[in-house]
Structure formats: C-alpha cells, structure tokens
Image 1 (cartoon, one colour):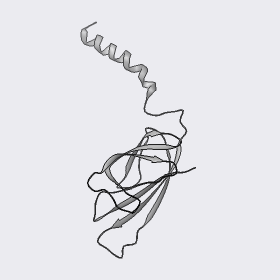
Image 2 (image 1 turned 45 degrees about the vertical axis):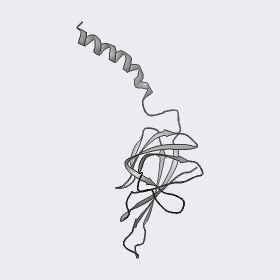
Image 3 (image 1 turned 120 degrees about the vertical axis):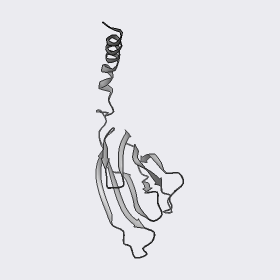
Image 4 (image 1 turned 45 degrees about the horizontal axis):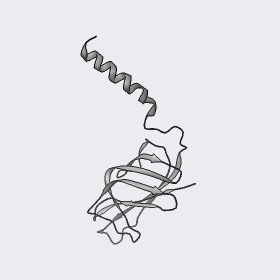
Length: 135
C-alpha cells in the first residue's frame, strides 16, 4: 500500500465513525418558533407595514429562508432557547425600536419568554423580524 493510500485509509477510518455525529440532533424534538416579518421604510411617512407570520419547527442543523432578506440556520436547539446563525448580518433591535447599525451580527439566541428582534441593517428601507419560541 502506498503512503498516499495509507494516509487516505487512515483518514477514512477516523472520519467514518464520526458520520453518525452529524449536525442534526435526532434525539431533540423540534421546537416551535414563530417568525413575524414587518417591512418598513424611512422615507415614506404614509407607508403601511405588511406583517407576514411564519410558523416553523426549529431543528438543529436545518437551514430555511423566511423571505428575501432572512435565511437562518438553527445551530443549537433546546426547549428553552434556540441559537441561530443568519446568512447575512442583521442588526439587533432594542425594546424601543432602535437598531444597532454599527455592529450587525450573524449569531443570535432566541430565549423562551423573550422575543428576539432583528432588522436589516439599513436606514432607508428593510424588514424587522420578531422571533419567538411558542408552545
């Protein structure tokens, strides 16, 4: 057996048992999550927001697209919190409706009893999201 084949065989022998340890946690029950998207803009005072509500089941390792602005991956799922990673950086929103435009992020945690509020990091027009664990 050549050195190359031996290296490849050794690598496969080490990696194959890990295949069962994939990203999906098959023992974890899906956790219901409600995502409400509201469009907005900063230049039209007569703009009326359109809300769209999406009911999903969070499953660790699953990726889904909510709309054109939000694609999320469930990185860790627990009954009391769900960790997500967004494909595009999003701005966390505070309780008063303000958003942090200077430090958009990709990783967030939705905790049971406390909705997570995110927004597209812009001041002209975008979408606000409210993510909440449901029963």
